[in-house]
Image (cartoon, rainbow, N blue to C red; front, side, top):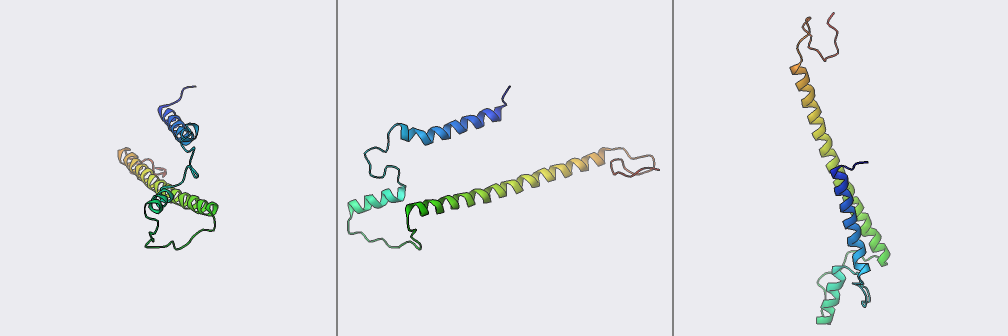
Length: 129
């Protein structure tokens, strides 16, 4: 069973993504930290608090989720909605491109076909009787 080039590239990309997910855990990059894989916002907040304990933020969040799990779920929902919008856009774009190519091919077929002896172009479905 021979794999084509796109299948090989997709397989390599999948392995690369899996390695990026597993590598930090396997190398123990988060050991010794209270929350090893926090986001950049939490790390920045910790650094600011350490450097200037009396710092007051300029703004406060409009909505503070009740727990980290709810915050993660909302983030995942936001990512899924964004992926859905992008997939819809690219699907519509590809469909329009394919429709335009099919219309151009159909126009080329009817223009290139010799007319029927009865004067009706071939490929229209009409019979020349």
